[in-house]
Image 1 (cartoon, one colour):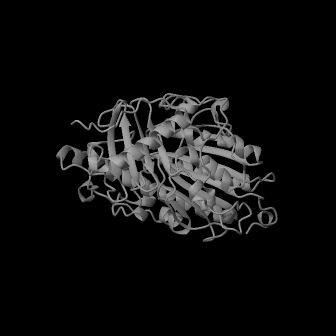
Image 2 (cartoon, one colour):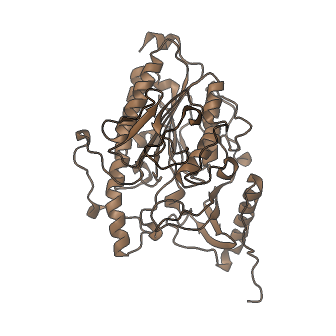
Image 3 (tube, rainbow, N blue to C red):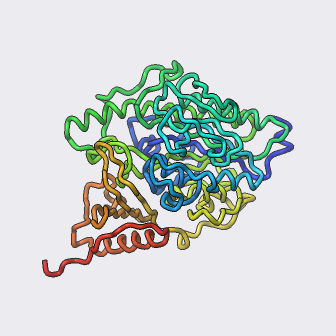
Length: 461
């Protein structure tokens, strides 16, 4: 143990966010996917708090990231689609941490400056207020990735596979910071592009040959028995799972590095994703849909030392993108800024002996549902090309509407593959009306604009 760290431990815990792009919750071994092996992610789930009700309220890269950093819904921040930059004057979670005396760092894919261009330069004033920033706006090529920022404002090609290289940068930066004379508690973010396509597998010899062959994969039971859909899904999933396992490997590296630095017991590691990927389910590919494979994300909170100062187990709280920043601040005992509209679920993770303990969870006062949005249509093949709004409840109901039309009603608690759509079944009219009221309440409460249908039954039919 480093003697200096023992004598000068931070007053508040550190935090590391690690998140991939397009990593659906179902693609983890702890959630039962037999195709993939994620032992390091599984350890986070086993030894920490897993939020199995977590969702991506805007299942599209840039809108989710805007909500993640600001704690505001996409229509509140203006970051409603890819191509909509984060307003540079808008406060972020980095500002809140900095105001509490934290060092802040962001490493990896940013995708908040209005482009999909690998060569686009993000100036310092548009980097969300982070003290240290090394990344790019977007670069969908895991074998040819460039970084610029605090260490070099001229783009430098990363060496090796993208997730490995970004993880190296994070570890090196934290080693430098923790070993420095001005060590402060830190809030650090690692954002990697995989397993977002293209599904290019890692080539580092550490991993050997890819384990998975497309022909051996077990598809989800809601992938239609249509040859082109199943062939496309199998080919994509072989690379997708390899990228997930590579991310898992790097999570293990990061945890080991924190231990070697002597700060593992002082650090929350929070793992999540910005949204999922349909991968052929319901005949869809990509994101931007309200089905489970698109909106359901992993969300794990872990602090080394088993149950050291935190509760462990599983929560069904419907944590949404706007809730992640408030929850993270709450873990550190930092007041949530007034501009953040999300809920602080940190009480689900804290034990009474934690210095930041603020009382037990209060489910009766928590949101009983989460609000989902696709504001402009995402005009791509094999996706839903219409705006929609949806609500998902703590007890597993999901209701979705397109403009002026009711569309989907599922009970995911008993139908996780969403094969029974009850939206036009009179036997479920009462449940539909309940969810419709919830959706209308979310639209009003958040100041959104969306035309819901009239769902009054036609008694004369």
